[in-house]
Length: 81
Image 1: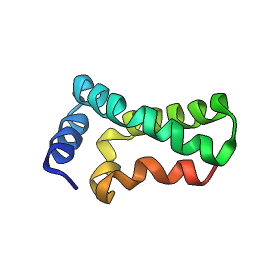
Image 2: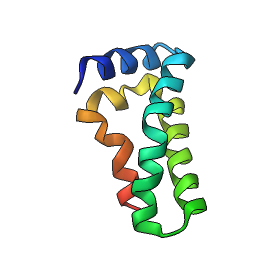
Image 3: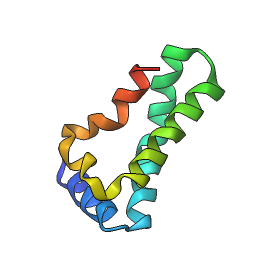
């Protein structure tokens, strides 16, 4: 995991909305593209990715992101569509 990702994760766990926004801006489009390859529907892909980010924010205090290496937690739910 990159150092910058570690910093962002730490800040998200502290409730820093700007860190969450940075994570969202960095990963939203690539994840939508990735999800689209599986579901072949752009609206469904976007909904799935939005759900992932909602879960990240809601569970920020649980340490779920800390347990994920290379932020794979973000991409795995896309595969399981």
